[in-house]
Image: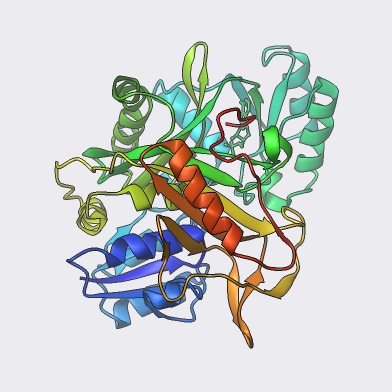
Length: 425
Ligand code: AMP
Ligand code: GLY
């Protein structure tokens, strides 16, 4: 099978590694790839946002399958455009991708299909926002969300209703551009968070593991929200609990999309809060998480490529996706300035040669570039290190010893990923 992988971050490096293990793989192509992915795939200089370029490349290269890493090309209609040209895509079409691209759509969809969420209201103007907040129906602490795609920067957790009102108005006035033209105001929930993954062809569903993401920048769950500073897998919850989550959240979402005439094909990622009243959906994503993929995929025991192909073509098999009993801990090595603007160009020392593995650890490139003197840091999240082990403590040890071997000027990371007393998750 010839596969085109779209994207170039840490998640895509982990996907490239997983796809390369498949005995069914003929050739792996990546667009645009990265210095890490370049060791596993032939790279094409086509950006993940260049839908026409990706479609033309998929046709010209006669690929059997396109695997979409990030959400943006899916939200822009990549799968639809590929379908017109007869190319299967692992990743949903534009309408089902609205589960991630529009939080207003996602909440209304949950409402239509009895999927548990916090109480919420969708507003498109300052007066409506004020009225919703002052009515008291959302409680005394309200989460303010830009409805559109905001690269993980669109959710605000103000302490008071006055601050919530100010934040909602800032969004509606364009602080995040079009992403905030519609705002979702949502009851503030509390409880631990869990990321649950499933792969579906629109009808059949396979559970695909769990993870817990550390979203805050600093130890103990302090500081600004980020795209994720680390991750552990599996997350909390035994098999019976997960069956229940699938029955309450994943199965009705997949059935709901089918009933609305737009079957969902790809990986569905539910971000849940485990409240006293049971699990509630905070968000849906239409792709693997980053860094959740870097934690999840090294634990795989199943060949994912036939699963991706089956989901993309409506022929998902019934065999479950198996994971090794190992635990994984993923630590993000970031720029000190992250999540603010970050410098690029510092040479990175101590990367393993030519392979992803460093003993029981994996090293995935998240934001690097090839410079004159070797690999350089390029971006906020630079490297994702995943340790594996028979328990979380062993995995954590493996991750942090590999993390210590990788050095550059300005490297920063959280020291408490996977530690027993954790602020978040
Ligand atoms: P989201 O992108 O919607 O998952 O939001 C990012 C983060 O904001 C989540 O991981 C939660 O930590 C937090 N969050 C989102 N919605 C809520 C909510 N209704 N109550 C409390 N925290 C929330
Ligand atoms: N780590 C969170 C995400 O990928 O959305």
